[in-house]
Length: 85
Image 1 (cartoon, rainbow, N blue to C red):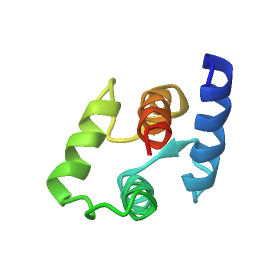
Image 2: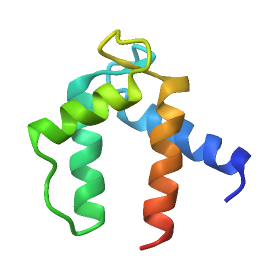
Image 3: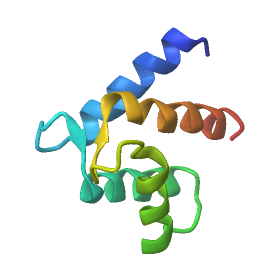
Image 4: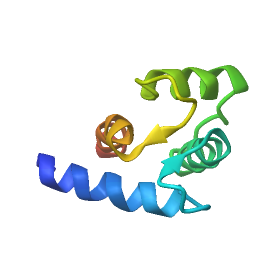
């Protein structure tokens, strides 16, 4: 996948999980996304600690929510993980 395809993929995933259409992925939405990703990979459900870590990893401005720009980092990781599946 090239960078444009990764960005398009990230935007589709972002829009799917931004349930309240706030323009941000909040913790509950991130939780749902990570659980679904784990299920897709036949992997163990993420712990609260792992979800908190992922939120802090992605939330570069520390506002406790993930912007579309911040979310691109997760999109890049997801493409790598799902591509190796």
